[in-house]
Each structure stands twice: as structure tokens, then as C-alpha cells.
Image (tube, one colour):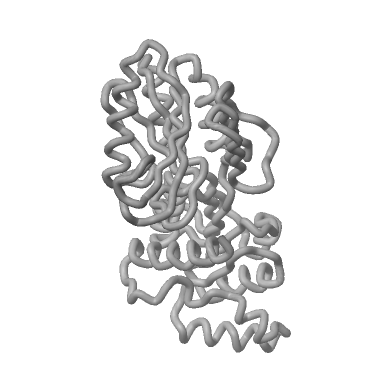
Length: 316
């Protein structure tokens, strides 16, 4: 969302801007589909389409074209195979195609709609073509759809909005750190707690939604979904167990519990006595996070993020 906010600000300032977007890539291309960069008339740059000498040259080209009265819209293919025709100057192999899309104050309403969509957890589709740039209510099946017939006959659609929701059950210090990190990663973040006047919960200005609830009713607040990720980190073993027993048989992309091995062993023993199978327990990521000997809340948040990203991307 930060990218679009910067773009919105520049357009409000009557700046002419180039929006560079990778719409196709293959091989070991450093720029992946959906990567974006804005290059403003005043020299401001934000985002990336792959970095390196390639990006430096593309920025120079955009800045030069912004001096024209009517900057053109066009595709530019970059081959990462050294100094050849259409070469990027990079030798990492692969290739990528980038749209140079000039924007000005007439596009403010579109960017404003995109920001509203992101802030309100809506899912819509940005569409690009040589003659159009806008936002559609129609959801596409995949995150990106690209059609390139010729340099003047192409289209690119991108699904935006928060594609993944992270539920944090427990608004303590770790929950606060996890909230901050996952908002930056593009997740819609929801935090639940059952304690009144908890400073880390009240001070959490990162989460998109916070709510005090009774943990025994958690199933009423978290719906099933393959883009839903559950992290359980309450302040007591008993509350962890209350939450997990209600959610463990539901369909989520990820469910994990924060805690020591000893605590989790006690919980597993109690849950198996209540009829939960070892197979069900094995589906829970516990202790949650990649084992990096994390100590601080920020380190724990990074370990959790690494594990969830691994799960999220395992089929990409």
C-alpha cells in the first residue's frame, strides 16, 4: 500500500510519473511479474523492477521521457544475457517484459480507488492495456493475467487487495511484533485478545482489525479459508488449548502455536485424551516459527514470517 500512497502523493502534487510494471518474466529474471517502480518528474523513485544496471538504465530512460509533453506508453523486453540486443546488461539469464505507463493528475481517482480497496480488504483487479488503466470489480482467477500479441496489442490484469489474512490470537509483545511485520508483507492482520487494558493490544496501530473476545467463542470470529493463517500466542497454556481445540479441524492454510516444547507436549497429551488424533496434531506448526534460536519478540516474528512465507509459496 505504501507504493500506491507514494504514487497518489506525487499525482496530487501535479507530478508526471512513470509507472513501470513487470508483466511477464521467465527463467532467473530478477524482476518478477507484478514488480513495480515509480519514477517521478522531480526525481523521486520508489519500488523495484529487478535492480542492478538494468534498473539504473530504465530509470534514466523514464526520466528522459518524462521531459516530453506526452510521454509514450510502451513495452520493453529485457534479456538477461549480457550486452546483446534488448539486453539488460545483466548475466543472470532469463528475461522480463516491462510496461512503461505514464500517469498524471487525471489518474488520481484510479489510484484513490486502489488505496481504498487495499485499506478496506477488498479484492479487485487492476487492468492495463495501451489504451486503458483502471480498476475493475471483477476478480481474476490467478494473481496475474498477461496477454502479449504485439508491442501495441497487449493487456495485463493484476488481482489486488489483501489476498491472505493473518489471525493473531493473543495481543502481547510477540503479537505486536508479528502485526507490524505481516502488514509490511501485505497480509490483512486481525488480532484477538481477552484481556482488558492490555497495553500491547491497545498500542497496536499496525493491525487492520483488533477485537476483545471470549476465547471459548473463537470459532465464531475466524472463518475457514485456504488464504487464512492462524497464529495462536495467548498468555496461558489453557487459553492456547481452548483456541486450538476449536480450530484444529477447520480448513486453513496454516495454523501454529507459540510455546515451549514442554508446554506443547502437555497440550498434545491432554488433547489426545479428548479424542484428537496424532495426525491432526501433526498438522499444527508447533513450536511455531523456523528454528533460528530467536529470543526477542522481533526475532520470533521473523521466524514466524519465514515459516508462513515458506508455506504460502510452496506451490508457486
